Image (cartoon, rainbow, N blue to C red; front, top):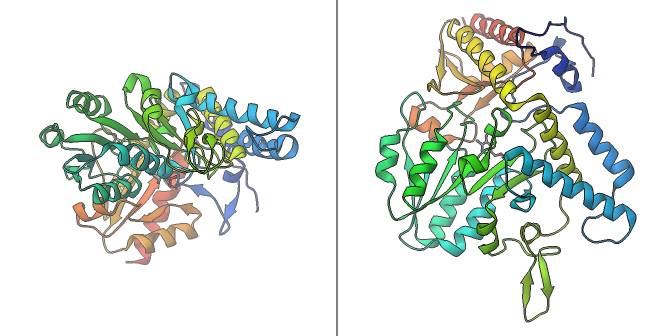
Length: 419
Ligand SMILES: Cc1ncc(COP(=O)(O)O)c(C=O)c1O
């Protein structure tokens, strides 16, 4: 890896020091194809700060042991670190107690856990589950499977052409049959921020539970699950500047306690005979087998890292960057932004006349600019808009205006190549 030092930028008027933040992320300081890396694929995964990398190395260097199982020193140290990480994640999302946080592999596993454990016990023929048209596949397919198994119906809140949800239609879809509303806080394909307080209030009034897919929202905006009053909330560590292979599911304690387990194995039981098994208390009931101990520790460190910077400050900076990026991209000939809802965060999805998004992605990569192209695991969004794919630049707190300028220059170059 060849490294590069960019010209330093002074802190802005609010004291936001992007250069200081960039110094925390070693992966940002490299060249690709002989050009400084411009990493704009943050919705897929973010880069990792040194504190997270150090936490992983420290754990394996000096604290590695299995958790919840040993009486020896290292095992109790690993257990303490693991449980401290749970408390950090609980604090980060505003959960009342750490036991309301279940460690999962990712957001996808969190949704599947609820669909399997809560859904199998509670969904019956004729019930309805309500999702929205801007969901990621991971908040569609688990419900599709559950509905198929139970004879329930999957209903979908429609969206307008700009990516905003049709709340009037939502009101009409809600009924006494609606058992659960499963909704993303922020669309990865379009950047739409959904009006969660209104949606949750209406769902509650109809007697439905609410699961929030916070995979994208968790690293772009402050989250407070108690203020939101959602029943479940999922997040994924690798987007929140943490490691891959770790995520978290928040559930209200009473709901989690009432739910049967999902996966069986070690740690999730209170007692096992061949005739009868009984279950451990939450959160252990939902954490069968050896967990991703280092991943959980890394996620806790990542949550503390962003909290230390301030999620409200991160949100304010990214909003300013999004406005700059929106203006800049609107000035590129033949480019059309896809997803222009009034409330958006950090996603710039677009198509360019006469150039397939995959070709665009390949050309800008040669300029060192990493963007995503395709359906972004949101095929129904593409189908609804009648397009096969988009190119997507997704921002994080370490991105800069100069990087957006580099994207624009690369897109203009692509335009020239395709005449
Ligand atoms: C909105 C949204 N939900 C869920 C997911 C799934 O995350 P993971 O693959 O880490 O489970 C993603 C990932 O892109 C996402 O953007």
